[in-house]
Image 1 (cartoon, rainbow, N blue to C red):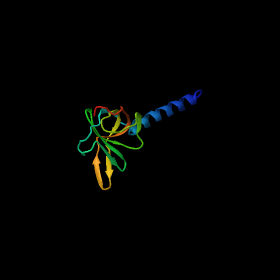
Image 2: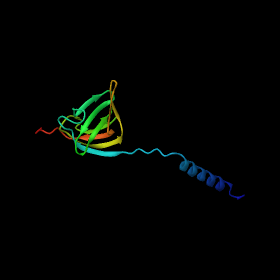
Image 3: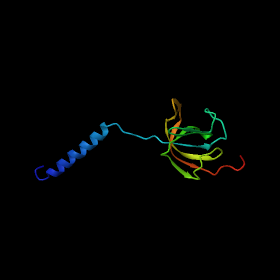
Image 4: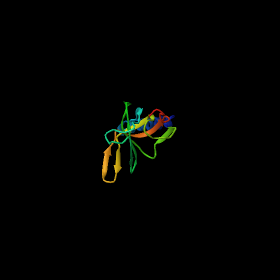
Length: 123
């Protein structure tokens, strides 16, 4: 070891970094997919698009629907129109709350990014 002290210090440093990373809690961001049509009306709120203080609460229908909070920081792709009858597809982080004054409406998730189609002409 006398001739190679730097190898010893590198080995100790690598073992220290590995050990510390194993002990620290890992932060993971669980992102899930959603997709479906925004109905003309309905959903638990009675509206398909509900304005909140912290964004929009969207009712998205099947196949992967629910109530989703669309914050101003979310990336919107395609035609940018979040209106009833458009089809959506995107990613969300589970959980979220739509705030309207003292009223708090829980959401299935908070949208990270969303793509929308053109509104359907037949509806």
